[in-house]
Length: 579
Image 1: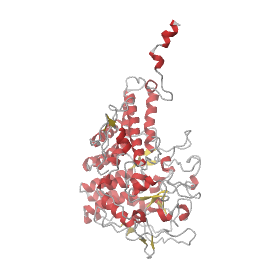
Image 2: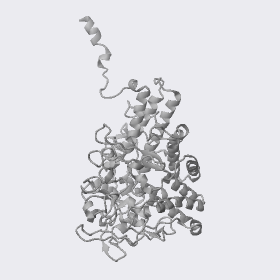
Image 3: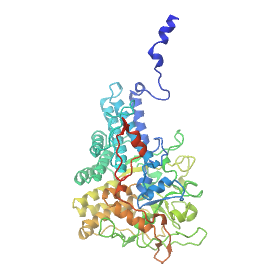
């Protein structure tokens, strides 16, 4: 009995290790550190942070797409009303989409911090200093990315580094959001740029060039043109990256990790995991038909008429004016012919004589035009509710019928291994063009824009019967028409090149033109459209009276997070102005 008492009264009896969780001791080795780093990478697709996935998908289709003039929510009026509120600028702090995005951003930050903490521990004895430094550099790149996502969403956000973060203390991360965190985001990307290799053996890992490009992007958001230009020039001259010959090669599985890709989020399917793989965060954004890609669900994220009209050309050039805020653009005065309001059973022949940029039909599905190798899009049978959401469907994440097999798809056909290109060489060229305009180098900016326009002209087209007309800007055009025209041309090129990729809203905000552009868009999308033939049709009447104001430049912090940030009864997080 005495022996039994001597053991049973030990404090160790109460020290139970949690099950299903690796301990610091188990992770303090090369395999453990790499597992932690992969865990931080795994959130890049936006899925796995305890939310629905679509709230934080890497495509940012809700926050960067449907909140802009590129897209509408799609589907029908009653589906996912939280997205409808975002589309119509009715932003409340209890919207679950804002909460889900916040969870994801700071879950990613936490995973990166834990990787940095353990990689830097002296307990890890089977890694060289150089190996540890590279792991920390990759983790800091990821931490920079997740903070960047939060910064562009809410502007006023806390920066949590490995010195603040303590997994054992829930209050450790309850820090104020009153400090501008750009400098700390820059520092993470700079460390990554200084310590990462130019190439990686494993696809998807961050490189020196990815870090430099991301750092340049952070500088662009702050209008630090000269510093950004220096980085972007370096990438153009020394990275070895180049444009692929055909624009659409960037949007198909066969083009994953090509020569244009600088940082790519890897999507895998049928890899032994259950469920949330491939592009799971976007698995609602498919045509609403069993005869279409995705095979029957769900009709979200449809292109707007405004976006489709933006691809019209005049003498091969965009229909833009000389005002950089877009107020003098003419592309949206008359609508491109379409089947809005024309039922699938009715005879319909698309007028294919109106000249358009060929990138339109690699971006948007429209009735009567070939849809990859599925044949001509049949119209409203692919649309869940055309009267509510319009006649178009997105195309960049769709797949070829010939590629519908077990190596590219999960069994649902809506999870596909078509990677998301986070940063492409085309981004770098147009960011550099943006810098050149702001620094007064209009001829250089024009040459950079023309590289994309020449690629669009000489690359493959989707439908030979459509009148495609795209030309480079003629010599001296930017200089002759001035900086405002050049600025507008660069911005329009970014819209055309990256449409439906989740960047548009954040670009409008950083350019300082969101209020004018989006109020003009809401007013025009709310009234009937008009084709060249004179036919009129209803657009998105629910946008009538919707107003974008200064407070909408940034989203509201989730109310739950403000409540959860309390220390001694007082919240450490401050709500954004106007909410």
